[in-house]
Length: 312
Image: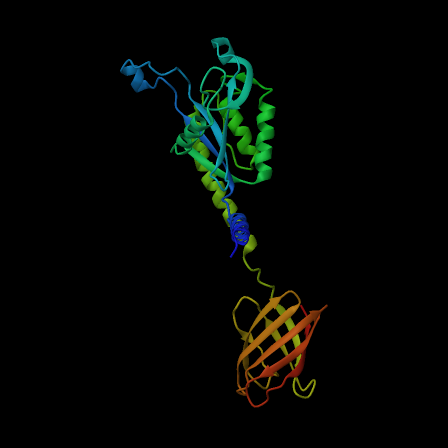
């Protein structure tokens, strides 16, 4: 093989390998987008005060959120919390607010991507957090909330980081814990966890109910069947819940059946009959009339015509 042909063969192999890899990547199923609410407590804590430890910056505590978007190369995360723009004492009490990115690495919020992602990963593993899975549409609504809160004033006891998170929680359709003036972020998050668990259970119950097969309502039939049309007549009280019912060709016989309904199609399995002639009926409903054929496994095999009029 010439060098040119060999090179061409290798290039085709590389192209095919890239194409297969790309298709495989697209076929991977990524987990859903999530928003995680995280809190940290006040400093100094009572224990720190008792031991005279005032090394940490004084704070009443804080709660914020981390939005995580899964990608083929790992999650892309961004965190937001509500702060006063002015970090002076007067600004903390009341002043213009800002829903800014968390984990500020300096006074100007500069932070290297590696350090930022490391901080996010560390905080996302906190036990003092709760996660809610969301859609892309809900993620966009959260970003709209962030923009709205960027224009709000910060008030320490009436419009703070908890109120920002509470607004997001409500927009996601989850019940937000009752707010009170001196509520701490940790206390709010503890109550939020309980609400999220309860709401998830409620949603799962609703989803399971909606996805469960719906049992068709019982029907009262006037039936006509037989190798000679109209030879046998009777009335059946048909049920579709898996339970058996009486389904004899006429009052002179005895038989037991089970039935299924799917759209306009009706299927009846006469699994036992006193004449030793089990049969399967299939028909299509049009208005209040069901028409079709049935076949049996005994002496009279069919198929034969049958019809039922739905009385009620």
